[in-house]
Image (cartoon, rainbow, N blue to C red; front, side, top):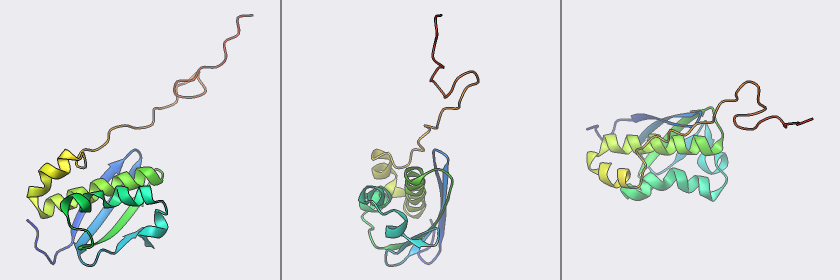
Length: 132
């Protein structure tokens, strides 16, 4: 178990996005890639994705978060940050494993973009067939 004054680091991944999170006790300030949380994720849906682990752990506004994300798009980055926050909360308090696992927050989503195959315009699409 980590002490209360120590920063907890965790990593999360989703699609091609990778998020590294530093979490320490504080007032609930969230900073992503040096920008405020509300500015980086302007939609309410993406903000709620990131705040979900805190709602389950009942620790809203009790930790300051600094996150660095690379790769992917906004949805992938939000999912990666959510996984990293869940793992950081778990390292603080092992009793949170059951509620976080029950909501699916500790499982890394394995779905990735399918690669394009040769002889086709996309992953599954075929070129138009011409009989004559």
